[in-house]
Image (tube, rainbow, N blue to C red; front, side, top):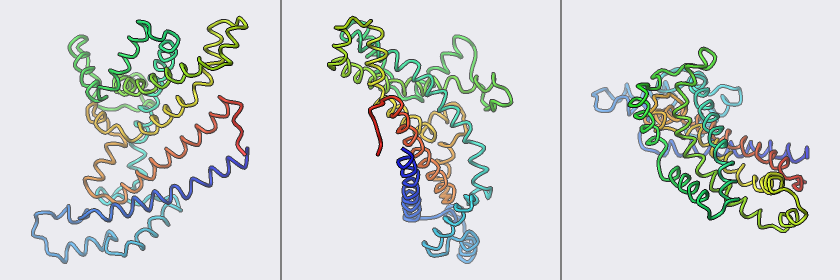
Length: 315
């Protein structure tokens, strides 16, 4: 067990290095840079542009720029934003708590409705309850979360004469104001998120309910609730946990449009702005951060597998 955990942790290093190399090369392959963008349409002499590129280190060979950047990362320094001039760490620290909190709230909401409804749909297969739940899940898959968010905002304004606050308040300052600003985006994102998990839960529970050991438990007179919850659901949760974990990792940086709708300045919006400004340092750091989130979430899921299924043993 210990050998497996250490091996997985060490495997993260080449994975993240590969992501860093790929991101670095792709960004340099895109025509233009931040200096060309800043002076686009102006009559600034070429010498001024060359001087600015020299100040930012963009005139160095590509391999030299990459080694400098990796050296900074090795010392815990992500560098400075080429666009704002502020440290990248500070820019991320401002926005990361918002994205993490929104992802956690959306995940909790999604799991709270996806797993119970998925189990009920499987147990009541082909009944009217099953059809209603399936229509509910198809609606979540069909409608984008930002559009659901817009409808929710219009509904609360029209019916309750209330709109979510335009300024984000950290939870440490005012929990009530913080929840008021994040509850609608969390529900909008969580509904879309829950639809995928709900359908996965229904499919896996149906598959497990047809197994021989479930029929044996029923033949022995075990209560149906015990059969479903203790025997069927636990063995059906492995693919569901995988879907939930991957969706959670995606939510950290993949809610660009939803953040725009609710005026939330999160990691997704920061990444889009960095791409628009050709802010190489910011883009590379954010992509590396998101890759690290995916890697760590996958590692945590592997650990959860062993808890859910004692038959799993890693050599």
